[in-house]
Length: 110
Image 1: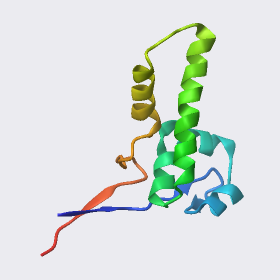
Image 2 (image 1 turned 45 degrees about the vertical axis):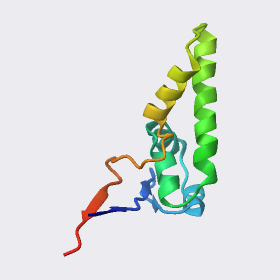
Image 3 (image 1 turned 180 degrees about the vertical axis):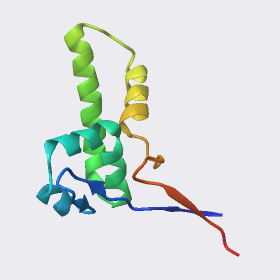
Image 4 (image 1 turned 135 degrees about the vertical axis):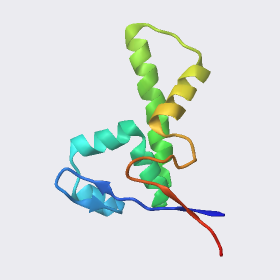
């Protein structure tokens, strides 16, 4: 059985369904981008469309963001706990998770 990753567009507020970084930039709105960012879908979308440099930058930014929030309220947690949180909630892992806009199809050779 072979798994095939299905490329999914990001649906923007203006109704555009973007499939490239250029289309994303042309149809960007802060609400859609932040929603996809915080759900982890932006990183997964980048990986599916082979935009490889962005997920790495997003992952670095996620850790900085979480550390800053914790710093603001004066909480110190082990780095491993922070990394696990970021991996689980921001889509840093390399595997493509099943989300409403993306799915894997199982294909059988008959």
